[in-house]
Image (cartoon, rainbow, N blue to C red; front, side, top):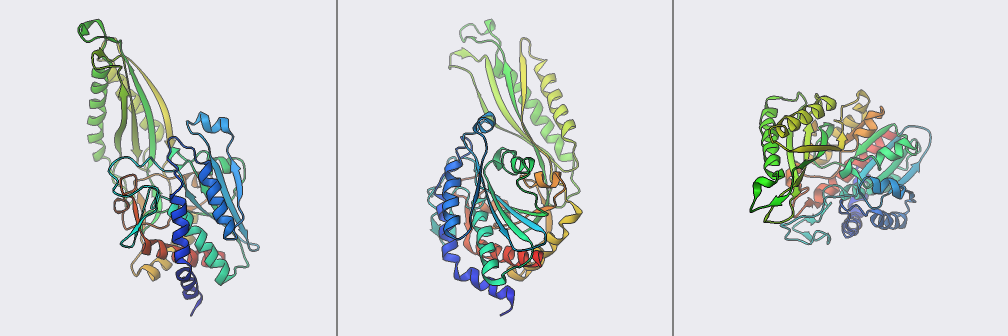
Amino acid sequence: MNIDEQLDAWIDAHFDEQVKFLQELIRVPTDTPPGNNAPHAERSAELLQAMGLPVEKYPVPQAEVQAAGLQSITNLLVRRHYGAGRTILLNAHGDVVPPGEGWTKDPYAGEIENGRIYGRAAAVSKCDFSTYAFAVRALEAVAKPTRGSVELLFSYDEEFGGEFGPGWLLAHNIVKPDLVIAAGFSYQVITAHNGCLQMEVTVHGEMAHAAIPDSGVDALQAAVHILNALYRQNTLYRQLRSSVAGITHPYLNVGLIEGGTNTNVIPGRVTFKLDRRMIPEEDPAQVEASLRHIIAEAAAQSAGITVGIRRMLLARALQPLPGNKPLVDAIARHGKAVFGEDIPALGTPLYTDVRLFCEVGIPGVIYGAGPRTVLESHAKRSDERLELEDLRRATKVIARSLRDLLA
């Protein structure tokens, strides 16, 4: 067998162990919010160290975490130094959105059925804790590298933008890689992605008894007027098209609304949270200014209404850097060999924290275990799942690509 076949054989021989490792990760909840994710980091560190991968723990100060609306974050870093040469960092995140409704499986059991593993974060992205860890183990057992370094970064605030994961570690000079591969969710190599602006809009009126509605100012009616203006704008976004393959047009979603005090009370306050996805060609400052103008203009049409707007998150789009070519070439070559089909380089409408590395000039791409499309994975929906064969094959691709990149 050649070296790549030997890597594949090692992964096959240890695949049952790899699946059990992923099951253990799924069984510790990391719902964000509320974002109490330090316990998962502790469990992950135990499992990694038991496999011979010593872990450095970097807890983010509690005051900073709480100011971001979370409860606890401990970032994990595994450093494997082999010799002189470049450092390749593999980054996956353990935080997830809460399960929500409609599950037919226990979201925290890691149940296996018909060749699939089910659970929240099975596909995004605890699976890539497993992909990356076992790819490194295979690399060291078989290829025995003597050049360069590999680092595994497991972080816990990607759902909130990554500022206390990769952003915090970069700001404190704890990581300084030359190349980055971040958690994936499809067969493709992702080289670009959308940006995301999230805002909280609070509409203030004046409470009143429902029997005498004219004595109050209905915040809900005003909020509906504002929402209608935003949804009209959302329709217009379809006319703006991205030139990046895999990305279509901007769009807006209102994902959470709350307000009022009781059925028989004119609501005096309504709050909604919106999510605006930005294509790589857009200027985030102009996007935010436009939204603020639309909201203010619509609110001004309702007498007695005031509006507060708070930016919750600004995640810039991932712009591909020329230096990512070695990553794209290695993954595409080995992906074709392992999967038996071409592995294209594309953009994705999602956003991730790999952008934080690219913003400081570190080339990165997104690749890991996943189906052909994000939709197939049920990511952020009920019964999130991953084909185990996709996990196996992605691990082989990463192990093979690391061998090339360190050579």
